Length: 357
Image 1: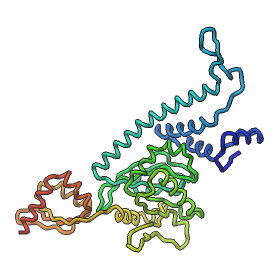
Image 2: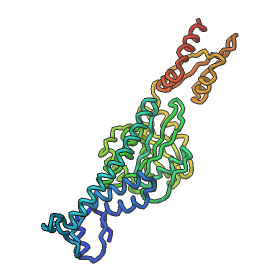
Image 3: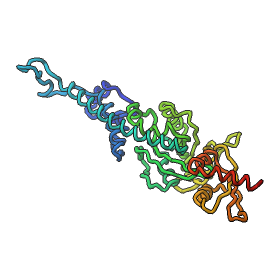
């Protein structure tokens, strides 16, 4: 029997005795679904940790000949350890082992995040209610081939891919686990390292199933979880997915009074409006633009290639010596990255100033 509420251990036992069948509450069902979806080693560890924390509060005395072992003293005196105490001890030991393993994984993820932060690489994280189409959108943007299906919690393991955005440069896109109403606290704590990709993102893409009648309730549920993990204050762009199932709704960008994008309407499955999402993300992440003139010698082909990849060249010409005079307009963060990557770029800017004088 399934109960769409969280039951206390005593309520579960009483219902099982009354109905003479197994009783599964909301938390237990979500944990069972997670156990079936987990694919990576980290995901399996996280699910097992959440299951054990849930089970630890629901242990009951088992009837049988091994209910109580004899004491370990000389002559086997003393009441010894009951089977219930043994189960609790073993679960406690296993929980500690899982937490130690996940702590190592968390350290590795933290190190990767610090490396990206040092390189000024922004991270865009997909969040949203389960089965809203996050993985389908992730594949439409990155062609990553991530598993996507019309089912709850198809994604448990975060997937990161690199993408290029005009005026922003290299950006990391993260696909994360879906949220649900009344998400069990044991799951939130067990998936702490996974949700960390969300809490430290530069921008959140809140994916919403536009064809769901309960989309407003789903939005509130996601915001509640974001508040619980401390990610509610991160800049968020709403992405209304599956607009192909709605009549009279075309892919478009919704803007506020300041012409800033606040929502994008698209269909990831039909590959409609993906270019609009790129545009909205670019506007959200783009910082102050800088306009610089650079005199590039023939040996600076690598720098010119970077300019070309970023599509930031506004004008270019050649002088009598064959040097290329390039005018670029680019995001300030990207320009600072190039100054670190190519120290000679500062000299080329000065050369351009001298050439004009």
